[in-house]
Image (cartoon, rainbow, N blue to C red; front, side, top):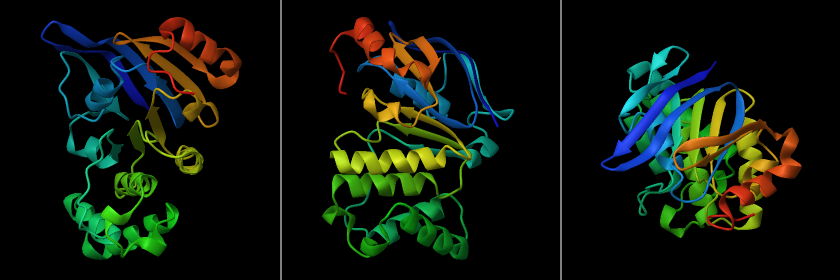
Length: 234
């Protein structure tokens, strides 16, 4: 199980958002840090096949990004997770399951399982607009997991969450990383310090640091030396 990114680039007119990035990611949680504008979200969208690269390739277990088999293996929580406020939590998940091609019986089973997993079973019949931000983010994780993905891409999943919700979210992501390739993008250093076995730091479209979390005592100092306080939130 491996995500292979080979000399990946994306240019928007005069702006190079992702600049010749090459990576190999195996099972576990990999944290992707960087200030706003570093290119993290563009990289995520390239990995998910939402954007087409200017150059380079993305593949998962030999499947090219954008192919049907690749999409079947992919789960994605975007930075701006859209939901239907008047849907109940369960109705929203059932709707998303239908879009992903699950049978009605499989959708019911999977929705029930995931609502329990993310701690939303007791509020599943309430409208999503009545939920807290943390509850909606957990619903976002649930929809990303409907197809039991082996590649999970999470873009700023803890933004705006209170400390208790953030800790709960970290624990959930760590558990998912035991059987999947998980890439967690954030500008919050503390979001990855407890769960990421590997940390990438991105700046100006390039990976400027790639290392195991064994060196975490120096990671925040390195980050601040690279970027100062811009975009930093411990």
